[in-house]
Image (cartoon, rainbow, N blue to C red; front, side, top):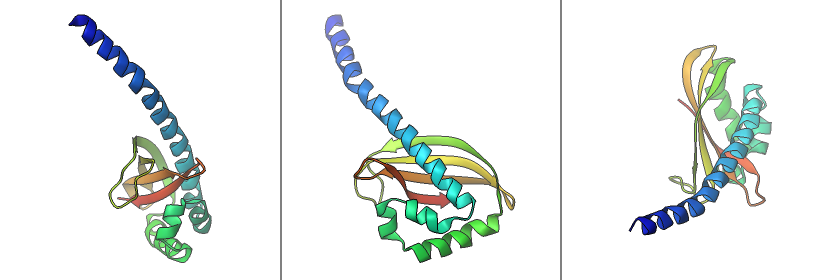
Length: 139
């Protein structure tokens, strides 16, 4: 019985380890993409942030609507004062989105006019393999 348990554990570790490493690599790539994209929004480059977003994002919101919405949300907050990574979770499924590869990343942020906020940035893997932002929310 102990041998069976040990064999089952070894098989589980062999099967699950590559997935964990792959997930960790995906999270790292998605986080880098999110940080680059956030730099665009932080500097008011809203049109460029839309252009750099995922095809799913671009299909969901027009460039004009995105710029208006982001101005309405970000401008009243004032300049970014600080942003700290909070969490990241790799998933293949999100409510209201097609199955795919996503990383839901949260940051604790503070702005000139809002001391405490949580930003959620959700990159998705595009067909070519690159990670691009598919969602952005501030609470």
